[in-house]
Amino acid sequence: MSNYYDLFDVLTEELGNMYAHMKTYNPYKGCRFDCVYCRPSFQTQAKRHKRRCLACGRFEPHEHPERLGRFPSKKLIFVCGNGDISFCDPAFTEKIITSIWKHNLRCPEKEYYFQSKRPEYFTPFLDLFPANVTLVTTLETDDDQGYEYISKAPPPTERYAQFKALDYLRKVVTIEPVMKFNVHSFAEMIVDLEPEHVWFGFNSRHKSVQIPEPTEQEIFNFLTLLKENGIELRAKKLRPVPCQLN
Image 1 (cartoon, rainbow, N blue to C red):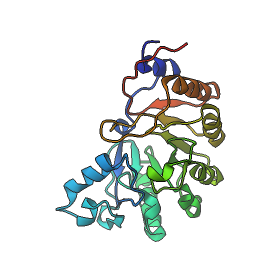
Image 2 (image 1 turned 120 degrees about the vertical axis):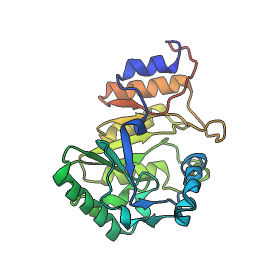
Image 3 (image 1 turned 90 degrees about the vertical axis):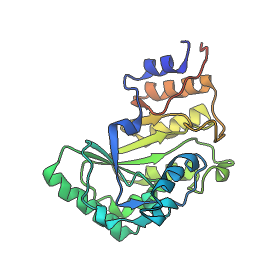
Image 4 (image 1 turned 120 degrees about the horizontal axis):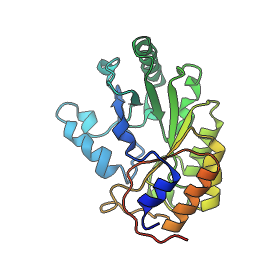
């Protein structure tokens, strides 16, 4: 294998960008986790909307009730993808879920992602979600040390425990941007969550944001362990990584 693309092609048949297959539905926007890798992406993009909505421009958590029911045409919909829904008033989250139930009457074939870096937020809603809702969380690593310099979100091991505790069948994990990890303990963590699939990708802003990353061999060993345990892998925001693997 001469590079990482070859490696990933061996492990999964589905390559691409997670967001190429979906559109966001944003009746709620904004986040306070202030992840360093979101600053040059989501937070910078949000500034373009400050003339229409000052809260959007500042990436402050806020509601847009006028957008309830305005669903995109894509089959896969990322609910409140321009923020983290865990900052949303639970009463408004119930309205979002109700809007999906209503939309299901006309478009039952669609699928919805609800994603949060504080997955315990979903606990009161587990019995309210329709069957075409999948819960998602991000786990960039299994290492909590120094994570407070990366994000104000719950540290990875706490986030894992919260996600594990959710009594819900449909779960997905996104490992992006991947950070330095322990191969075996991180693989055990992901396998233990029994996700439908895992999205994997690098820091897409590596020129402006520096985060500790695993070696090519560690990536190979980790993804191989996931594949051997029946985890479906999907590529998200890959970049060439020259490597020679044994």
